Amino acid sequence: GDLNVVDHTVCPSVDFRKKVTANTQDTMHTLNMTATAIPPTLSPANSSRKDHLLTAITTISPPVDRRASVAHRRARSLMDATDSSLEPLCSSFIDNANAPIFGVDTEGRVNVWNQDTAKIIGYSPAEVMGKHFVKEYITEDNQASVGMVFDRAFQGEGTSSYELSIMTKAGARIEILLSTTSQRNSEGDIVGAMAIGQDITERVAFEREYIRLIDTANAPIIGVDAEGIVNIWNQCAMQMVGYSTEQVIGQDFVREFITDDFKTAVKNVLDKALHGKETANFEFPLITIEGDRIDVLLNATTRRDEYGNIIGVVGIGQDNTERLAKVRESIKLIDNVNAPIFGVDIRGRVNMWNQCAIRLFGFSREEIFNHFLVQEFITDDYKIALQAVFDKAFRGEETENFVFPLITKGGARIEMLLNATPRRDEQENIIGVIGIGQDITSRLAQEKEFTKLIDSANAPIFGVDTQGFVNVWNQCAMQLVGYSTEEVMGKNFVKEFISDEYKIAVQLVFDQALEGRETANFEFRLTTKAG
Image (cartoon, rainbow, N blue to C red):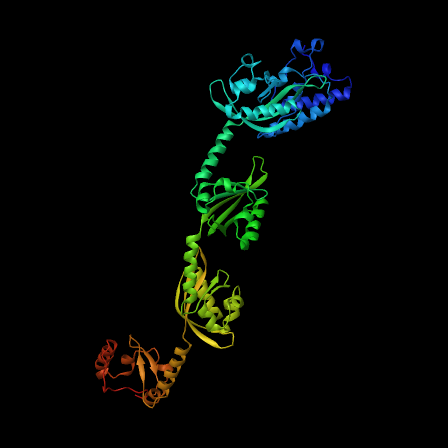
């Protein structure tokens, strides 16, 4: 029947054999291997020690595949459970592994070549055995570095996760992620090197396409590692800032390229991203190679490896210099205009307060910014009305010529005529209200004085609006005709108070006045309250 490898190769201790058997089965299962019988040539009767077979299984690099990663740990556990005199489990253990495994002697000639290696590269074991691996199958640009990897293995030093390119029999170039270790004989002498790999051709092609897209993107893209060292710098970033890739890669991004006043803020954004908290629309300046300042709007995104571990930050930016210049110019115009202009955010807190507002009301920006305008600076009798104006603006509705009072720092009351407009961001979202005002305190005082003069004049004075409705009715008119102000206001003057024979004539005089033609010394009859 089939030969039990562990029973025939491991020391007689039953417990020890059970431990090795369990680890071996777990490893074979995880690697998707087929456990076949040991060929007679490897039976204990004529065994030659091939410790490198087991050694190869325990040097799987931390791979992309989670199953292979588990296999790596279990295989290492198997190696730890055995002693240096352990015979090979079987050649099929290597030959049927679901990963390319090959070995070379100390002269670099192939002496192990499993089925997966043959399938990937296209050469059968018979075609490669005894051939010089590096010279025959490695691309010229990789021959020196691969030779050094094997040389280290010949000195007893293993290499993990080394990428190399191999030419297939069909002439295609494939990418392999490789780990190497030393081959040793039964006396522990190094007799060659073993390598186990993964075909990462598709992943490398994807990475290259990803890199190409980043490099040619029409936006500056910058990346840093977990230490804040630049490792991505695309062409747009190069054109915008002036530094070449060679000049920035490996440099500390914050220390070398951020102005002192923003170093702490930018460092905080990167640190947040390194803890998984991303930041959108962060504004900061970059210093160009000529020393100019460029304003950048940045989205900082956490960068992770294939296992989900955070390995750095990628920032996709936008040159915001021109837009900010326009914004600053607008702010300058607003700040210097000869009218009080203020703004509130969506919660009603002051976030804009121009120079005219400062002069008029006496409050500096520091004193009023982030304070609630309605609750803190508006008289109680106007709080509800002004809040209603703001609420309309938050819904997108403008308000014109709204009159309300503001209390100055000195306690004086100033009458304001206000136009309230919704304030929007770049995406047209409403983010607050802008109020453009006019101080009408003096005008209102004059109007009140004018009204007083009219009301106390020693002659009947009345007025109508464009529809002919009474809107002025002084004390003398009230005494003369007998109707109080409350009784006539809003009434049609001609219809209600003019006798029938004068209705047409009086209406004609009013119509002419409404067209700008005045009439002097016109006589007509008024009907008194007494009749």
